[in-house]
Length: 289
Image (tube, rainbow, N blue to C red; front, top):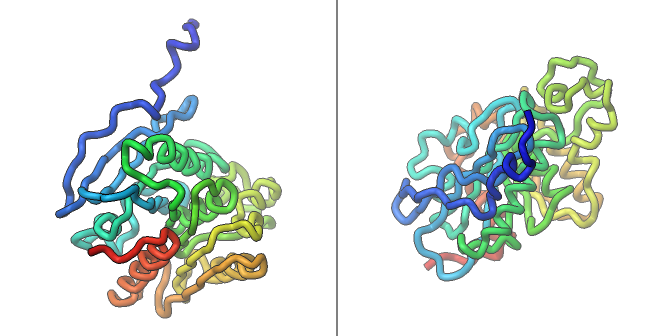
């Protein structure tokens, strides 16, 4: 069976109607499930966009990339320590004067590296294309990701940096072990093979391998007691950035495991406060009246 190619082509996400807004917190508008990409042979890719209800000028953008070992995860979930926050982290960022985009991306059961990075780059391109109607300033974009999402955010900032003025990573992998032979690890599933079986792809998937003097500034936060992704991963990336002359703030959170497990509430609040302050500084966002 065959059809004309033009009949099979999906609608262009750049012109699709935007979702109807919801209002999840006072002064905050949420567009949930905007389609930003349709990969050939794959499902439509969606993002949520959190916006202040009123803005006098184009908004700087924070793009949050969720974690989940490249295998699972929800695009609007910054981790278990934040699920009870009212208002939540994204509403707080919107109240501070940011637009917050939370894209979904293809997981390792759907596509291998570099699909995850390419999907986030496609989300950035969609935001640039629709910036006028959404009231965005995509030239002031800060990427932020946690765990595997931090890896994808860093990789995007280092290799597809259009408009990106800063990157925040929380407890993220930064350098894959090219000697690892187990094909069943989360890293191997993301690559499509054990790193030792495809060391070139493993190096290409390592943010450390892409550091140049042109990289945007980074803020790296990691639990000092992380038993899932050792904090040495963030230390390596911070070291590489500094050696290239790129500003890199590194903060190791004492008594914190992965996902900030074990950290007290004040330490978790401080991680978010550092993230907000870094994003505001990089986006040149002044205090709101």
